[in-house]
Image (cartoon, rainbow, N blue to C red; front, side, top):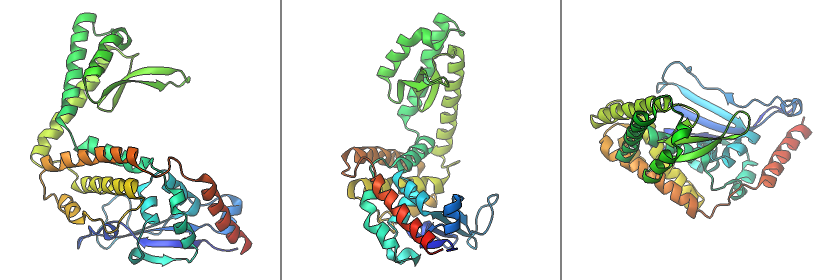
Length: 326
C-alpha cells in the first residue's frame, strides 16, 4: 500500500528563529499524510520521531530533533494555536528542506485555518510570565490575601470554612488585582465557588487555615524567586527567551495574520538567551508583552473560529489520494 507521504519538512528551532549559536542542535519538524493502511485501520501514529539523543540528557550540537506530525493532527495544532503547528504553516521557503507540491493547497487555505484564540501561544506566555515575571503587584496580592486570611482566622477560628466569610473574600477581590471569585464544576457537575489569587485556586469548602497555609507557601516562593532574580540566579534564560519570542509571534499573528522568520527581535532574544540582560528589565518586558497579546486578541480581525469544513475537506482530499494510490 501507499507509504506515508511527506508534505513538508522544515528546519525548525533556533535556526528558524535566527537565534542559533555554535552550540545549537539541529531541529526539524514536518507534516505527513499517513499510509493508506494506517488510515484504513485507524492506527495513524501521533508523531514520527527520527531524532537522535534521548529524553534523559540535554541535547548537544551534534544531536538532531526530527519530528513529523500527521496532517489531521497538524491541522488541529494550527486551529488550537499550537506554536509548532503555526510555525510550520508560516515556514519561509529558505527553511524548507522538503516539500511536496500538494503543500501549496495548505498554504492557499491558511487564512481559513487560523483563528484569534491562539490558546497555545497565550497559555505558554502566561505560564512563563507567571513563573519568571513576578510583578510587585502579584506579590502584594499574595501577601495581602495572607493578611486577610490571618485576620479571619483570628476572628472566626482556623477551622471555619471559607464559605462562612464569603463577603470578606468578595470585598478583598474587589480591591486587589490578580484576585477573583470563580465557579468551577465539581466532579458531580455542580458548580463550586473558589477563591483565585495569583492563579492559585482554593474551594470555599476548605478551612481558613488550609487556605492560609497554601497562600503563605506561594508568597514564600515568590519571595525566594524574587531574591534570586535580583542576582540573576535561578532563571532559565532559554525558557524566558522562548516566552518573549512566542509573545512576539502571537502579537504579529493576531494583528497581521502572518508570522515572520527569522524573528525581527532575534538579537534581543539572543541577549536574553545568553543571560546578558538584567532580570529586572526582562521581567517587565515579558509581562508587558503578555498584556499586548491580550489586547491584540481583542483587536484582531482574524475569525473567532477556524473553518472546520475546509479542514475536513483537506483531510478527506489527502486521505483519499493515499487510499486510491494503494
